Length: 195
View 1 (tube, helix red, strand yellow):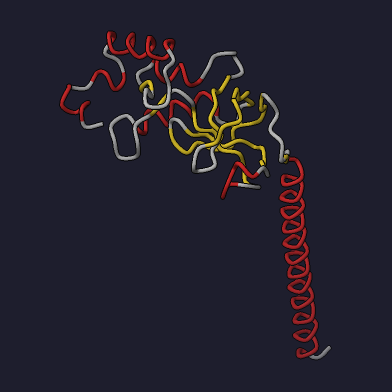
View 2 (cartoon, helix red, strand yellow):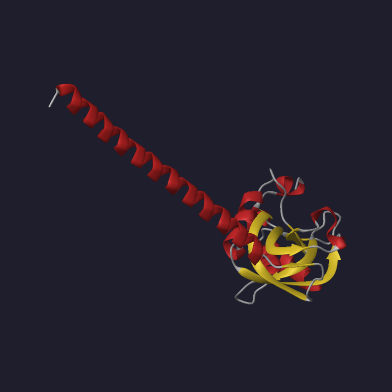
C-alpha cells in the first residue's frame, strides 16, 4: 500500500472519532438542557397558587429577606398583594421589628430566622391584612409549634413593635430580654438609642 493511503485512512479514522465525540457532546448538552427546562417547568407547576388566602397558610419558606420578613413557596394572586400579586407570598412578622440593614444585629437576626425556618414548612396565622409593600402580616408557627416572632424577641434579635402592636405578651418578652441584657439589649445605651 502506498504511504499516502495509510495517511488518508488515519485521517479518516481520526476525523470519524472526532465527529463521534462531537455528536456525543452535542447530544449530552441537549439532554442536560432539556432536563433542566423540564425541572424548571415541574418546579413552577408544584408551587401552589391562589387568589384566596386560607385562614392558616401552610407553605415552605423559600426566602429570607431580613429577620422579620420571609418568603413562601405559595403564589398569591389576590389584589391585596398589590405589586406582589402573582409572586411568592411574603410575610412581614407581626408584633416585632428586627434591625435594618447596616444596623447592629441585622445579620444575626436574619441568620437566626434563616436557621429556624429556611426550607421548612411553616404555618402563618394572620387576619388577612397586608402592608403597603404587599406583604401579609402574620405570626410564623414553626414545625416544632413555637412562634418565630416570639423567639426573635426572646433572643433580643427583635423589639416589640409597639407602633403597630399592643400585645402584652410581646411587651413582656421584650422586658425579659432587656433584663437579661441579651442580643440588642447587650449594647451600650448610646448605640442602642441609634437603632
